[in-house]
Length: 57
Image 1: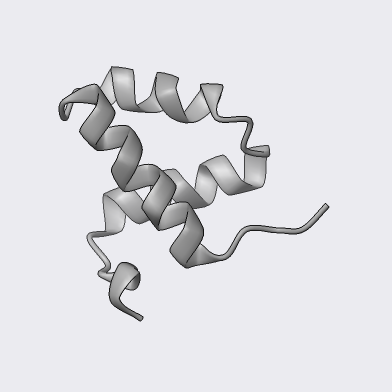
Image 2: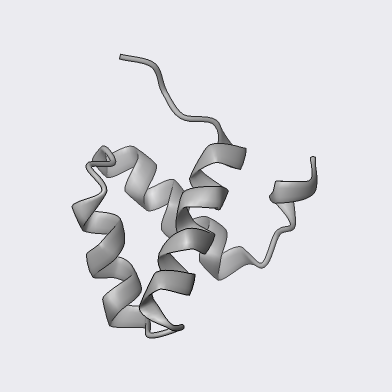
């Protein structure tokens, strides 16, 4: 199994926010349903909290 990059996780996280309409609880639920590993889920959530623009790398 390959590990997703930070950029891929950022794209997934931003997509979840858009699908949830900005609702934090719905965003987390969507991310849980994506099949991310625990480590990837943590990294995606940390990205959302950090406001780091890693999508433009």
